[in-house]
Image (cartoon, rainbow, N blue to C red; front, top):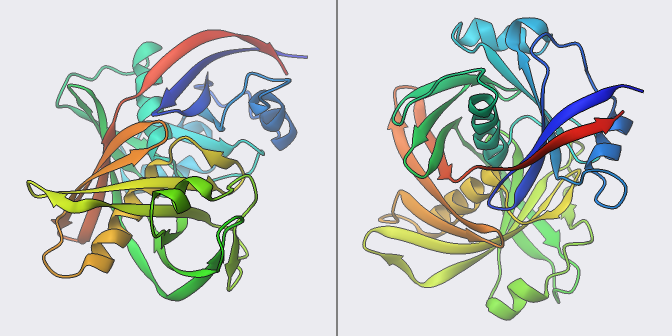
Length: 291
């Protein structure tokens, strides 16, 4: 057994066990990750964030090629132990953890490059949290058909990559949003071998106020289940709603999730349109666990 020091953190209720492992000496097995994330017998979390120097983990090599300044790599695992490309809430908590551990220094307005399996992401410290550039997004061709338990009929969803895979569908009203049973994995056709996150979106009425769009969202995350928030899912939900709204829809969105509110912004760059996510990141407690 090894004694592991950890810190528990969350971004709008999407919670993580954070571990500092600069030299990459404590890689966890899927079973260990699942045990730590278990809400009855472990610490309890939606996933694990392991802070490793990019030079000390195989997956970090590509990050250093992309950006030599990406000293730190976010080794992110879902609650079931599976690997995910990125996590929009998690990367904000990750940077907050690096600051708390004295591993980086970052003033308000400054940014830090973080390596992930989805590529290097720049995270800026803001007055009320952090904002992360999630990079280029992609609208997947064709519609999916999604059956959610407790909703009467399957309905079409739009596929969006940011870079985690998402399928977003709209619900008719508040009762549908609340009635949907996301303790069951939604059935997505055609089936996606790598799995997908599924977002249920309810546009606000009015949809746009003072140039900012507003939606509510619930999410089923692959490898986790329903979570109180999903950062890349909030971005995907806003992108899908803008797509449905058509020309003239805003590029700035307020997304209400069960755990709070995050901001989403789309903006042009030289390599195409990027999407950013902003919101709080909080550390709750620290301790030790045996693994």
